[in-house]
Length: 104
Image (cartoon, rainbow, N blue to C red; front, side, top):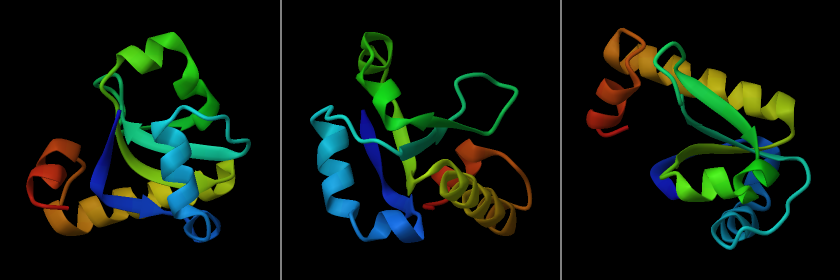
């Protein structure tokens, strides 16, 4: 698991940012924390996972890039929306790879 240098963080998650990131790195259970990653398929832009899902063996074997963290599902939707809005503003489209390559 990798964490983006330009991590998007929700307002509630900002208070516990350091703790959330440390717990993600050490695979500790965090109720109500969600992570935003690039989509695992070609039909979507982003995936939103509850952080406890990353504790499963399948996800521990994957090289996931965490683009955002949030405290609660609704905040995760807001953070994902902010990320997609920034992507569109910067690139004029919805290509995550192009957005990430542009230094976002």
